[in-house]
Amino acid sequence: MLWACIVLPHLALDGVLRRNPQTGPLVLVSGPVNARSIVSANREAREAGLHVGQRLSAAQALLTRFDAVPYDRDAVDRWHRFLAAVAYRYSSEVSLLPHAIVLEVSRSMGLFGPWPRLEAMLRADLAALGFRHRITAAPTPHAAYVLAGVSDGQAVLTPEAMRRALQGVPIAKSRLPALAAEALPGMGIRSLGQLLALPRDGLRRRFGAELLDVLDRLTGDLPAGLDAYRPPDVFDLRIELMHEVENIASLVFPLRRMTGDLAAYLAGRDGGVQRFTLRLEHRDGRVTEVPVGLLTPEREPGMLFELARGRLDQVQLPEPVLAMRLIARELPPFVPAGRDLFDDRPANALPIDQLRERLRARLGDRAVHQLDSTTDPRPERAQSIAGNPCRSGFSRDASQSASASKASRLKPLLQSIGPRPTWLLDRPIPLRGTEPRILAGPERLETGWWDGGEVCRDYYVVETSLGQYAWAFCAPGEQAGWMLQGWFA
Image (cartoon, rainbow, N blue to C red; front, side, top):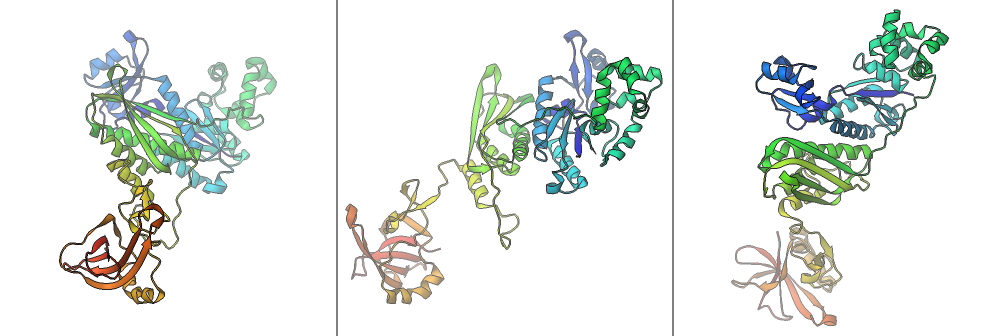
């Protein structure tokens, strides 16, 4: 077996910085109101002289302007579990350790490639999400966890190499039980190699069975004893904004983060999303809800962001926004769209599904429709939109009553112009202007007797005085009183 360990040394601070990475000096503080101290500080704050363990009052005396955010243990736990859900993309065996995630990857390498490639993919995902990290690999999860506390990027792939790597780990970084970690240096034991060489009976008498169990799990002589993590069936992410936001443009950055997180979570589940809700939280618990619906499940981050932004742009904020929340409860299976090997579309061309969803987000749900065919041969009824007469398109089923000789005569022209007009009118209208020039026809259509809408028409391809190509008809045997049915592109 091979276990990867992802250590997240700045999980709490990274979770806050994701809201606004352009902030100035910022610290996380914890403790009683009158005795708060710094538990984490960003680079700008450290360069100004602030440091972990410093009292907030001392920091304020040293630096007059900086942001102090309360340390939120619940938020840290949510980010921890969210990243475990992201890691679930690479393994079905994922477990949580303090400020770390471990996952069994020996079987995953058959899908994702050798360890260096899999490691690079893990790092790319974490970097894109904005979380600093250290990654190691070892035959046991606890050994990978210990080695990650010593160095970043170390990979020991065999039990023998693992034991050699553990030899030099200082006791202070060996993640042993607190009692043993404090007492062993006073006994002259300063490395794991020295500890593993001691008689087990003496260690049991001095420290009990707990220390021996920890060492056996470290070396693989005992099962790891970890609880398996499973991603939840609902995605629920809330971001509290650093300041009150009064315009939609300022919500774009956190929205991009949230939809990116949703996409990463969906990739971990190997699923998609068809509808989700943005909740804009105001003062006194008031909420503005922005529903986002798709026609088919999706999970591409750019597309989810564009659709959500299109919906958000249509919102008029009634008051400043304090926090944003994204909730996705319906997470159906996702099947990636295929593309032909010899597809000659430009590389930057949008697939039709993405274009459709972007148009719906910008123009509204009722602005984009899908055409459905019918069995009615009358052109104005040959297609429909959600049960209503269609507004555009063409029908290959209409007018199939022309004779074989006429069809043969029309074929060269129709091949050059098109079998039916690309713009088919809702209903025929009079063709104004001078008498058109007939290019092809007639093509007889006689139908509709069963519903009281009987028609008998001779259709022609004609050219108007302005040089436009049209599909028009008149009464059988006549070439006057022209009615326009559609236009050729």
